[in-house]
Length: 168
Image (cartoon, rainbow, N blue to C red; front, side, top):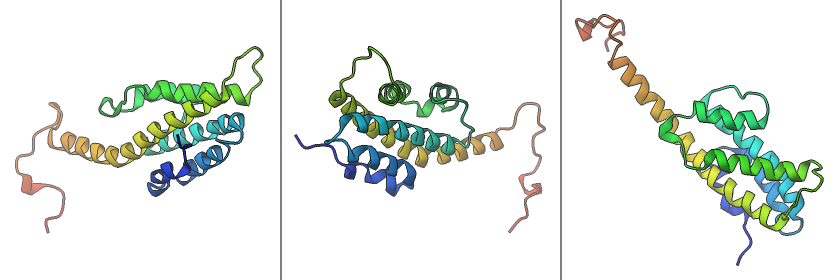
């Protein structure tokens, strides 16, 4: 079996998520030589991925990483919710925290944990890249629906040509 490669994440860089790609590259550099260090660096990956998600949503990140992940349930439109997205984000957070903080008595399996982080972030990044392409289209469609379907309280336009937009 071939070891995972940073090349599998080229799509992240091509999509413009350079910082996240750099964080992934940093973690993957240690994948074969030092599993614990690899797991530590996946913490930076998850933080950068969260920055990307909040930037796409044009929203402000709340407090700590736990809150940022949990808050996504409220702000990602249901159309884009991916089964296990929140769970996978939390899994990476928990694994990376175990390697970044001293946790007495916590059993660690660095070889398994690095693969869990790698595979989860690969799927999360695929979702983020697709979301970054589809979400603006969704927003435009929602804007059009809102504009073409005024609320019942708003008066209906009598004549579309009398719009305030200049005619060309």
